[in-house]
Image (cartoon, rainbow, N blue to C red; front, side, top):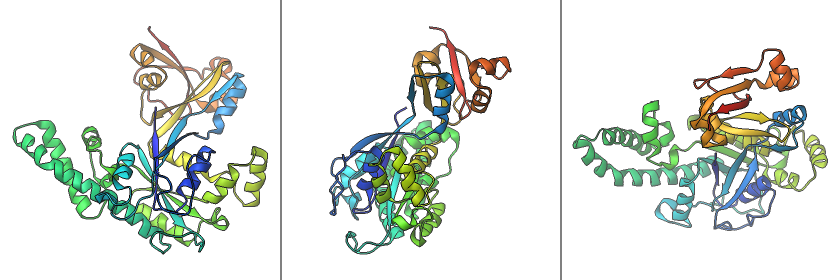
Length: 365
């Protein structure tokens, strides 16, 4: 399952520093001037999950393969991007290709790092980004509305549904609210996604704080948390500078450095997990001598859909899934013991997969 999180923000908020730390590379040039990132840099990261290593030990797996997620470092936005200012058109096109958006907001003071608006105000920065995306969505919907309305008047049922969604979205956008706040039924979800609205994408606000505030946050990050609640978005507090330094250290030195800062784990782990959750995702596992592997599915997916993530033939020919809850697998010491204790269940096509299930699929070829 290819999942993309777009990292966006105004220039000089720490986007590229954060991206470099995420991918442990220097692929994105972090520099003290606008538009230092022109082409979107793309990097894959593993989704941290301590459960996978425990499964690998029990199953004596030769290889561990975690779930993965793609982050895209997108060029810095400026006011007027919706009208093509700066790298506006390219910026908006890159966001459209992403599944969710991580807004990096500067929540630290540093006179040596310039701000494009000559002030440090993360809420104002967030509003600049949101406003540009809303303006782009408004323009897109207003251009489409007349054509859809003609089809709706001609009796096209799909057009009627789409027109209603367009009008509900326009009402919110004209009121300065994001399209993700549009109330919609499950039956409307597919048509809503096809509108491809930038502000309908799940949003995560990343508060980039100074080192001293990495563990507790600061007044600016707390104001962002309150703002996020009003905009149906998630929040993570992180110090991109700390994460950049951590990315260069071996694991044992990382632990010591984190302890000295009063942190239990890298902030990037929380960022990746929050992004994973933001997209409504969960993990199931397969475990054996060859490999222990995490597979990504959507919450609510049934067993055949989970099998299809491995291979489409598994979903088409699905018969049943041997399923062991993660806790049972670990507590009892593996598949054989779980079977002996009656904890290995055969589940059919209607089974809704639970996070952490250890599964083995039976299917017709």
